[in-house]
Amino acid sequence: MGGNDDCQPAPKCRSIATAHATAALARVWTIDDASKRWIEAGRLVAKGRREGLRCPENGDDDLVVEWLPVAAGRGEFLLRCPRCGARNFVLVGEHHEPPE
Ligand SMILES: [Zn+2]
Image (cartoon, rainbow, N blue to C red; front, side, top):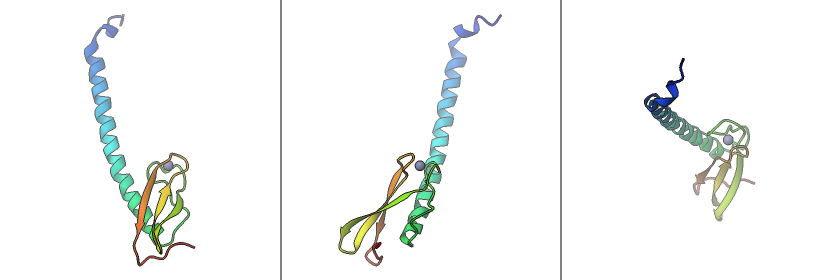
C-alpha cells in the first residue's frame, strides 16, 4: 500500500512550486526588514555609535565599523558583519567629524 505514490509527479511539482513561492515571499520580507535595520544602524554610526550594532541581515553578530577616508575630513563608514559577511556603506557628509 502506498507504492504508487512515487509515480505521480503532480503533487511533487506542486509542493516544489509552493516552496518556491514561500521562499520568495520570505526573501522579500527579509530584505525589506533588513534594509530598515541597515538604515537605523547607519544613523547610529553617524551619531558616533561603534559597538553593539547587531547584524541587520541575520542578527548573528555585532557589526564591525571601519572608516574609509575619501578626502580630508570626509569619507564613509563600512559596516560589516564578521559572521555572515553582510556589509553596507554609510556615507558621511562634510559636516560630520571623522572618527579619531
Ligand atoms: Zn551577520
